Length: 415
Image 1 (spheres, rainbow, N blue to C red):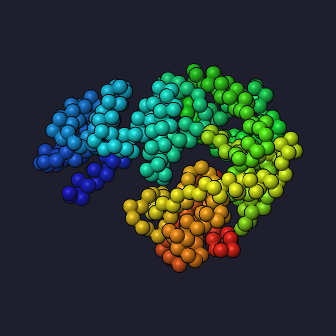
Image 2: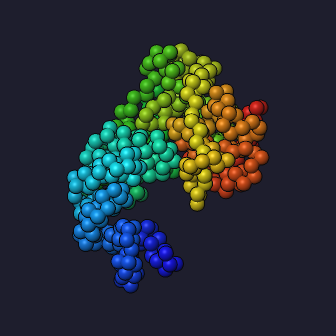
Image 3: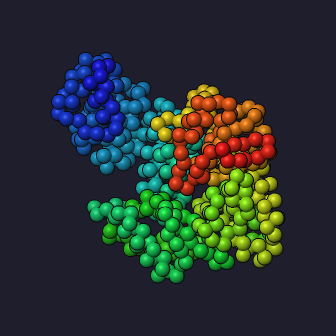
């Protein structure tokens, strides 16, 4: 493939429109080819230019001539979605899955379609399937956040677009009217529940789940405020049931200012240990004020939380850092992810069973650690210079813990 043609192909992959000359050159190259790849690129170029109706017969022909090509099915589904033929697109996506069971791209689009129909359970199942195969699939993680943020039905989109600042302002006003004590804090909204418990919810996910426009915004945020204000504390359970739901999490120093009233204690390497109630939808920090009514002590909470986490070690996955993103590696890479994806993976590094698994798969000796993402913890051997440098360059997510750490038999320390 010539350099010019490769440049055109990359523009199409990036979703950029082609000039008439570039599209003509791509068509000419496709006419000389025997396989479907370049013709499929032509079809995607047409879809990028919003010429879905022109792309459709080309894609139908490719499906007829190359009936085993999964990428042709995905391209056809894309064009059908552009024409709002959702039922036909879903049928084609299921054909793609029949050819390649578990195909992540087809499964993610099916999840989006299910979400649009308000079928949250089915959408969650599709996302779960993708993340079981690849815990680092960025699109699937975003879909999971959207699904877990709020269980409100999606509304039909209208023409006017509500911008994020307007959504934030409307949500804040609705929470005030509902008498809910809250604070907007960066990407999150902190909601204070009865009894002093603080729930932290990602506003970005709430905004992503909003499908309406200006006309439906007021009703949407009123319902959302009612849901947030009515969240159960989960603290009315008897002590034994409550203890079984406790988990420890690691947070950076000073985090108590963001989780006011939450029980915590100093952790290793200048970090802090907080305690959360296991919950599929929200991060729920245990308030210190809940200890007396529940008949618990801080020591009992700490012991129960770590016992629970000890019993649930996370799998280890070989990964690579590709252009600033963490991706699964096909073979041994020297870089590993502790990745249960439930927000507790950093704390798992301090449990005996997780340490045993690390020693068995990564090796004995000091480890370098990056806790920059709540969805996973990254480790490599300290002796592997290239992998340590990759961790240092990677940085961290806004809600992650900055810096690098050293994990030894003595515990966790700052590098």
